[in-house]
Image 1 (tube, rainbow, N blue to C red):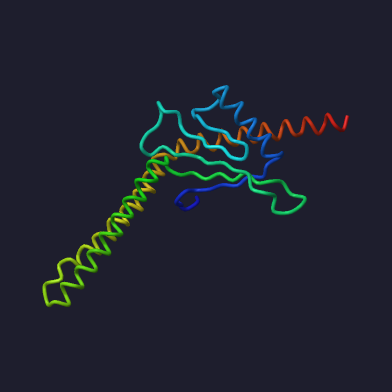
Image 2 (image 1 turned 90 degrees about the horizontal axis):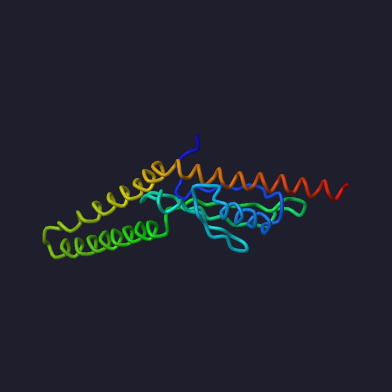
Length: 177
């Protein structure tokens, strides 16, 4: 089993051009073949769980095409899971506030210490760092709670990739006939 990661990623070889894959993805979304909704652009896509099934911990999957690593190889589909952008912004804001509190506590505590006062403000720094650690751990808890929805988004992407492989095989057979 893979260890948990912040914003897990995956990469899969594309059997065709990226535009063809994104066209198939757009068609599948329009047919409502999955428990998700999404926006498909020319060279990337964003998939989310449908609004009625969303929770605070629901994932967000960004897909983009990376160029082929070598001349005779296929392009790469790169997928990255992350929290909903609003949740991601909240986490970053929490880190920012706690970082400022840690720095402020450190500076004020050192000022207290230099004036021979009791440096009680130095306790703010380890408390803020502990809360940062808790916030980091909460991200993994949310990832665990959203793992089923991550599976749905990933399996939907895999089904579209398989459809692209099948159609690519059909078009290759048609050209050779």
